[in-house]
Image (cartoon, rainbow, N blue to C red; front, side, top):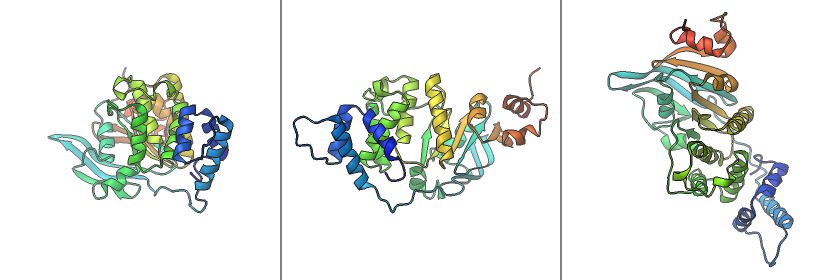
Amino acid sequence: MAGVIDSVTLKTNLERMPGDELLRLARVLKVPIVKRTIRRSWLIDEVMKELEKRERKDELPYRLKSPAILLEDVTKRFGKKTAVRRLNLKVEPGEIVGIVGPNGAGKTTTLRMLTGIIRANSGTIHVDGHDIVKDSILAKERIGYIPEKPTCYPSLTAREYVMFTARIYGVSHDTALIRMNEYVDLFQFDEFINTYIGTLSKGNLQRALLIGIFVREPPYILALDEPIYGLDPRGAWNLKKLLRELRNAGSAILISTHILEVASDLCDRFVIMNEGDVVGRGTFEELKSLFPDARSLEEIFLSLTGGIPE
């Protein structure tokens, strides 16, 4: 917990916790409860004391390797079709990079290779210094992934899924409870946390998956495929604000999208793909220098992927 959530934020999160959740956390921390009736304020103070005891003051915050994401000469073929051709891409800690392109450009294939779901035909991929093929478990432990079409375990409740994810990533039960409640509150998910995954709408499933990847402690390496799609305006706003804050705190984030407004709003650099090839890369200013008359990322994108329609 040290260095992750300051005491003021932690107390605020505890005060927002539902009573049954607070009691569950107290039991996990083995807070002695001997009175028949207890005050909520007393219980919060006791939980705070126990959490402070568990802080490891000598442990330095984890720092991501540089680059956090590295793809070198990566090619993926499906039969005779080349979906991604000799892709070179890196994401440093403290930046958001956007892969943008039309449907079929190779964006989702790139993220699926990065996360080890499919294997490249050639080239190398490293996540936080770990080779996705040779050190696949270590690499996958470091990355959080939201697919374009989110799927999950339909017979688990959202709460069960988040706590299951926490166990997979080795997050302690007390930390998982605190972080889960923090992001349940942020994404306004209180009403659905005990709902079965299989009954959630697309937007609420997206929220559940986001809470699952954020139950770990930062800094993060994230691969997000169309992360805003399915969220309502408030949810989208909260997610974009959160991603900027995480970027500023040292996380490395790769976003794939064909929604140029999202890319413009979030990304520090862009990799523009078309039919498996990189046709442009750089900051908006760098790309604009190639097309001085372009007024937006949209016009640059269209110029690089077939020309601006008449």
